[in-house]
Length: 262
Image 1 (tube, helix red, strand yellow):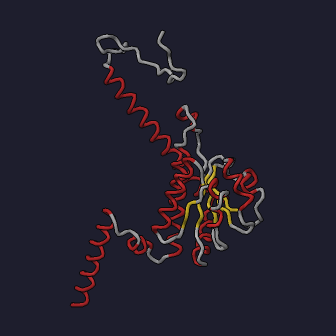
Image 2 (tube, rainbow, N blue to C red; image 1 turned 180 degrees about the vertical axis):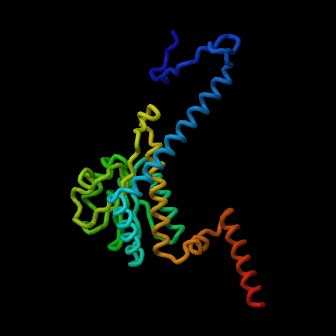
């Protein structure tokens, strides 16, 4: 008797399709599949759009969110002006968002580095300097690896948290932090991902975190630099963006020369 594998993939439900390739509703399998794909994609896009609209409303009207954003910009700007940097940490998809914000901040001359919380406990804590600011991304605010890291952070290190929590008292990330060194950047979503998509995959939550950290990066860049676009051009010589920067620079040089000749 042939042996069967102990491990089998879960069965995938199949549509009711006749031998002629027509469904019970009278449409072809290709048409039915195409409509399903488009419907799913539009549902995801609309759900994430609605979450971004809710985030905009929150920061437009909520004093906790507004104070958090202002304080975060002030603290990061002070760190950078004192020779420090932003140390960003997160796990899983939140960690990927963290890596993206590090890249964005560095492109604006806002010195940043990514710290994996597990690696931090195995020696990478040494990257944290006296003038640094910590930015943590965790939707739940209960990520085990992040909670394990917190006791080993310098007590006076300013801690910014991008999380679903909308008030400091409910966020356990700040329980052991000194007063005045805790900054909350609320990033909730109006409908859970399980309710929206039937699975707790980071989708809406990471979209909101990405938008909020992008907003933070641009706000800090404008606080630190008179013209962030010039700084960005200097740090981005490669790719299509770099080529456009060269053309813009040449155009500016020609314009200036023309003015001088006149």
